[in-house]
Structure formats: C-alpha cells, structure tokens
Amino acid sequence: MLFLKKDVALDDLELHIYKFVIANITKVPYMRIRELASETNVSTTSILRFCKKFECDGYSEFKFKLKNYLQEAPESSYDTDIKMIASFFDKFSTPSYVENLDLAINEILAADFLIFIGKGASGMIASYAAQLFSSLVCFSIAVDDPENTFLHEFKRKLASHICLIVLSVNGEHQDIVDFISDQSVANSKVIAITNTSTSTLAKLADVSIAYYIPTKSHNHMNITSQVPALSIVEYLAKKAYNRKQESD
Image (cartoon, rainbow, N blue to C red):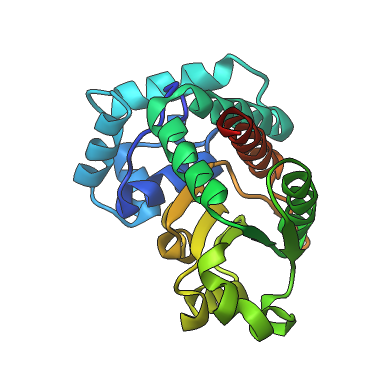
C-alpha cells in the first residue's frame, strides 16, 4: 500500500484517511498536518497514528516518502493508476493476503454450485468468471439483477450447496445487499470482492477480498479499473483448479 510493499491493517478512521490520500495523492505531500486533519475531519493525533502504520515516525517523514514514491514515475493520472495497480499486485506476495485468498478457495471447493453477482462493469467480470469457473471448477452462473431472477424459486433448497461470489467496487449496491442479507441464503457462503473491506457487502461476507485502488468516475459513471477484480477472479479459478486436480 502506497510506498510499502505490503498490506497495512487499517481501522475505519485510518481507511478514511487513506482513501483521501489516494484521491489527492499529488496534493498531500504539500499539505500541513492540520490541513490534512481538517480535510479529513480527524484529529492530528489520528493522522500521526496513520503515519505510524506506514512505518513513519511522523507526518514529515510520511510526506517525504510519499513525495519520493510519486517521483519514481510520471505524475499523470493514468500513470498514477498504473502505480496503484502495480501496488495491488504486490499484495499477492504477502502472506496475509494469500491466506485470505486461500480461505476463499476453500469455500469455492466446498460448494457444488457458484453464483457470481455483479452489476455494470462488475457484472461483465461476473459473466466472465462464471464461464471460467464452469470450465475449471464447477457449474457456475452469473446474475446481474438478483432481485428479479429465478434464484428466489430455488435458493432455499440449494442454499447450503451454493457459494455466492459478489463483485462490486463500492460494495454498497442495495439490491445486492438485500439479496445477501435474505434469510433464505443464510446457509450459503459469501465471498465479496470489493475495493475496501469496510463496505456493507464486505462486512456481510464470510470472506472479504479487498483491492484498495483509487476510485474514478466520469459523467456519473464509475470507471474504476477492473484489473484487480479480474486478477483476483483468475487467481481463485486457477488455484482452485490446481487444488482440485491434486485431490483427484
């Protein structure tokens, strides 16, 4: 995360600061601590605790490291996106992240049937995921409108055999939240692939996989990169396939 090549455990307040830093990454190195505290509506003490999480003795050191981090690559918005995505891939070498992915693979292999749920761009990833997992692991379908599908007809009977895999950048789509919260799927395992671990869907899931990259929108449309979600899907599919082959 940022200039650290490892995951950092952040509480809700620290995650709020982190999201502001990511969204204003070229501005923060030139902000005073009181300015950052004011912009994020937190205390300077909270800012200092946040800096310590990133192995900095104070805010000045944090700004220095952040500035150096940005100077390693061009400062265009696109290049910053590439930098953040590259930082995401570093997570695959961290034990805690891989352990979480392994938990998801365990749930996938324990299921007889997978349902991928997503809307918009996440829906397209869900469709691809369903095809990939059907080929490599087990029968899978994709759903982009959970409140108006045939799922209500049989989910109670099959709930214990199903693993629901939800893809959502913000993790707050109300119809998906309602579907996951429905008592009829209480016996189903839920894996959430979202941008943050503090979203509603992430908190409802049995396994939450977060990728933490800057969110972007254009003309009210979410254009946040789907590269992390796609990479997670492919990682899970191929690892599940390999493990399945080993057990056969």
